[in-house]
Length: 237
Image (cartoon, rainbow, N blue to C red; front, side):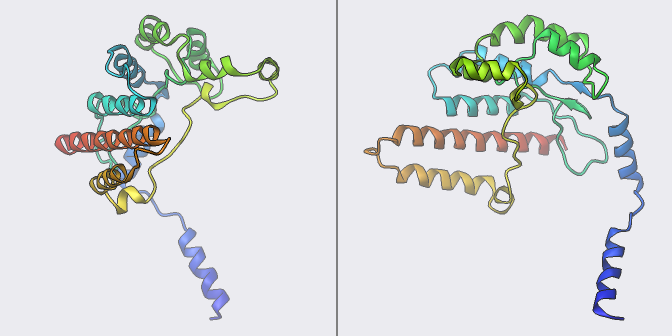
């Protein structure tokens, strides 16, 4: 058999569809059969944190890291039976969190999400009430999207409202990231040690000293948050 034919045969075998085992079939059915819906948990916890006064007086990087830590400390831990990768975005399969600190959905937004024909996200009555009474009143005028829009020239606003372009913050949080290979190859404790070394290397005479130190502080808090969540998962599983 020629090398070309061997390569083609190997590609063919690799591309062959393997039958699902019972565990995968069960998880797939649970996911496909679940109703896609909005989860209010993250929005409620983030709002709770910023209302608490804990982040007052802190730099923006530290405030955000503290918010992440608060989430990891208080978020629920739904564990799917048979799942090898622990963790869900919401409180159940096919539940989607929202990011009110970036862009707060108003009641009309929630109605559209719930009733639109293509790709609806169901919004239950409890979520609607939480938004109406807690989320929307607190974040009005404070969201990242509103702050950005206030600084834009009128020409940009006119073009936006005319539909020439849109922006993702109406739909989702920016910065989709999974941490990359480093978090698996290095480990969170080693990352914390690296952060500590970088802090010690900073020069107080550097005009950017404060900004760099605050960024490193935020990284350290975020690393602690990951460890807190990991320990919670280990205790539960």
